[in-house]
Amino acid sequence: MSSLALLGVGGAHLDRIGTLTVHSGPGVSDPGVMAEWVGGCLCNAMREAARRGTQPAGIISSRGGDGAGATVA
Image (cartoon, rainbow, N blue to C red):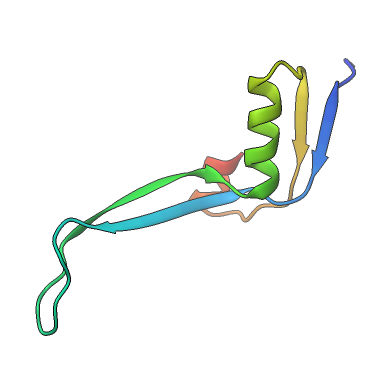
């Protein structure tokens, strides 16, 4: 078993962000786009630490057994 330079224990989940593609108005459909990526405070911090050279790094986080959990894994 190899040792880690950094171990994070906490949250990792899917970030889902919606953005309107037109100005919103009353009584109007609001078209937009959705983006999705693995995030969460701990996950983002660990990704940045690894990007800056702290490797190997690892995360311990609970997750669900659905598709979102599989993506996080």
